[in-house]
Image (cartoon, rainbow, N blue to C red; front, side):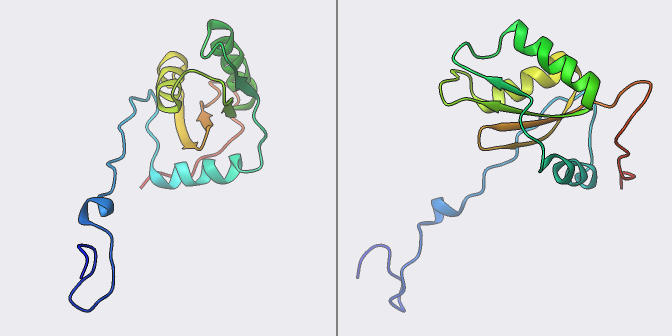
Length: 129
């Protein structure tokens, strides 16, 4: 019997492989509930990335472009190119902090940011529970 086989002869993964990663806390100016995040993810599913980060990474120009896009659209998808030197979570945290926006989702090399328009909100979020 190998170290991976049980008494019944079926193999299984070592217990260390089943440990789930704890979700990282992101300091947001806007805290979203799970229901609100799910609603924003559904709205953002069909969106194309408005801003793309390249080999220069997160620059002041990128931050300004994302700020302008959030002002206009409220919900923005950002793509990190394969040559981007910055980590996805670092970029998401930095943009969230600098722009007072909520990270609705990070998936693959994509970030979905939300910031409510102060005067004319376009997106109505479900009530938090």
